[in-house]
Image (cartoon, rainbow, N blue to C red):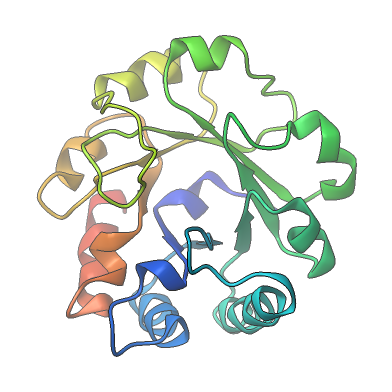
Length: 212
């Protein structure tokens, strides 16, 4: 069952985010050792794995997460999430609508990206466990990222949704995590700050200190 505390340090990663000389398995294991609370498998981009190769990798990463009792979420790919019996799925505004797959994910975690009030107005949050709000700061991890909305958007959407759990995403780093911690966000969602870190375990632990 989903708990808002699961959002404290929410690591998102795919093979495209891993620095040269490392594998995604190595990066994820170090992040799990550090204490991440949720993991999302997001395999995107021109060299992303597909088909059986993507499924096999998802199985490996899922098993690793379960060794540490950390929920394994799939980004966007409903078929994959269903095929491997993932712990949940996260979709964006332009991905499959939650209504189209909610019955297959009964009792699973469902997350939705909401960037602003206009997106919230067109979103049905009935079956949503949490919303990912952002990009909070400027980010280089997503080529199609919108302009930053700032930490004030967390407060706006917290009030508008009457307290739906929020995880902040987009450009989160050790330098600005404290700003997020002062808001009503339950945690931070991080890609490069963890994946590209020279000391992943320490980085995760440093993020965790903001969301005790």
